[in-house]
Length: 144
Image (cartoon, rainbow, N blue to C red; front, side, top):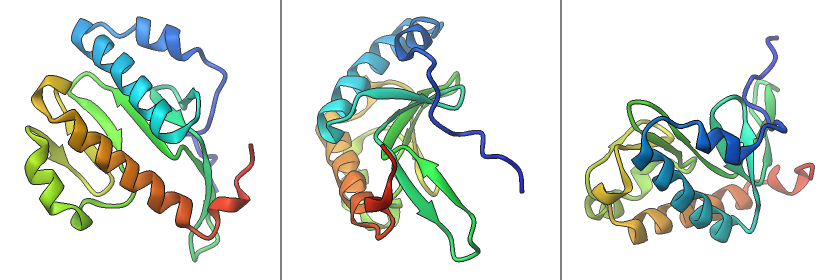
């Protein structure tokens, strides 16, 4: 089985954000760090080469495949800021309507800039996702 690439590293979050070319994404990244740090109670850590994550939990699929992932995280990518919301968006259609300009995939929220959205709604989505992840049966077995 291939090794999982998205795992916690010792790369500096500050240096990673400082290297972001887009000044607005850089500023938005600092806002997201503060928000997610407050919600999770965890310090930011790099996960893989480009995800800024907070906390960690252990997951295991029925197939036996498993690993660790950050409880909440984001990545200031070139096309958009990707925010990792692991609970799935089918549970929150009313919040998504209030969020503002965005796109979604199964577990990712894509926004161009924070000024396009309602930050209070984003905060609520992240809180809901963190709460759900912490309710997972494997979550208490996380390594810290």
